[in-house]
Amino acid sequence: MPLGILSFLTALMRFLGAVNAASLLHAGLLINILASPMSFFDTTPTGRIVNRFSKDIDTVDVVIPLISGMFLMCLFQTLSTLLVISFSTPMFLVVIFPLLFFYYFVQKFYVATSRQLKRLESVSKSPIYSHFGETVTGAVTIRAFKQEQRFIKDSETKVDENQICYYPSIVANRWLAIRLEVVGNLIIFFASLFAVMGREDLTPGIVGLSITYAMNVTQTLNWMVRMTCELETNIVAVERIKEYTETPTEAPWVIEHNRPKPGWPERGEVDFKDYKLRYREGLDLVLKGITCNIKSGEKVGIVGRTGAGKSSLTMAMFRIIEAAGGKILLDGVDVSSIGLHDLRSKITIIPQDPVLFSGTLRMNLDPFEKYSDEQVWSALEHAHLKSFVSGLTKGLLYECSEGGENLSVGQRQLVCLARALLRKTQLLILDEATAAVDLETDDLIQATIRTEFEGCTVLTIAHRLNTIMDYSRIMVLEAGQIKEFNSPQTLLQDTNSIFHSMAKDAGLA
Image (tube, rainbow, N blue to C red; front, top):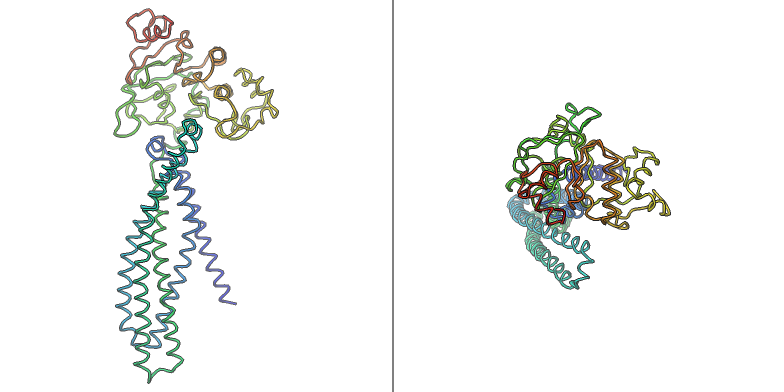
């Protein structure tokens, strides 16, 4: 009875400790990944991240607790065996230390090799996950170009490369088994030899006990070394998870001692002061000393050729990428000095690629349930979606699939517009928001923005120049610098201006 209770308590404590450790590691990994800057995702393959959350977490959850339990069991069985043999035949103590030294050398050599082989195997798994994810995402394109066999072959090649890394670990395992068999047989040999040599002093029962334990030690010792090696090789999973719990993260979500006023920003005035930006360390600047003042309530169109830095400017406003120099003032507040939540919750963006999540349409419009149904319907009406949503069977409770795939790109864009109308912050940013809709819908959206955001500051990255011809000013970017910043009429009158040539290409001048 006491043995059963102790065994139960041992197992309970071990598994509770394992669950607690696994939970802490997973929580740390998840929080750190979600708080990682965009540069991390630009430089880290998706498969590598998926590998951490799948295989490595599975190892921490399932494999390591079982191995640790078996290791402890084998360790105590081996110790008890050696103690029984040493007690029954004291001469055995003469050879036990050389045998333990040989065992230690074999184990140390094998563990170091096995750990590195396990690391190679884990690293070679990431390309498999990445390739599979890319294949699933681009399945339609792959079928359209009849490239199924090519992608199947690529997948098989990556699996083969993983097996190439896995095979040496099996070979190393066999190498270990042979040497452990030698150690076990030596223990049996010396236990039997010393029992025969000291037969005058030993009873047959003691001799039988000693040899029986010695015969069992081979298997126990073999398992103990295997469990030691398995524990050390699988602990690589903890190392890999821990690596991603210590990666650099974005700025704090909230800085308590430096929070803006509840009504901030009241005016929506934006000041760029010698602002510089690079996507990550070691790369060239994409914004090279932007200096300008955007007054409260101004409608500013941002234009430029591909790579001029238009989208980078919007990312700078949200601090998706941190400044490499200079600063941005929003109503006199340096945006880099406040928490990310306080900044991002006060600015609205209608992105170039509309983002929807799995869930109801209402959840996508009002995820925090701050607004009434009447306000939501009003926003849908102004976004020219009311008739469409009214025609749906479930209305606002219509289930959007992952990424909003059961809506057209234009409808998703209008949902993002409705979301912006609900929030209606003092500063609105449109990142080529009407690129996916037809000209008629584009005109309706622009009319809505002009009326609903009349007193707000609006920054628009223009896809079609005709949508910004009545704006207050036009900012022309080139190679990360402001080349022109004036009213559209003034820029059009200057036949040498970049904007005039762009308007001429678009048939507007």
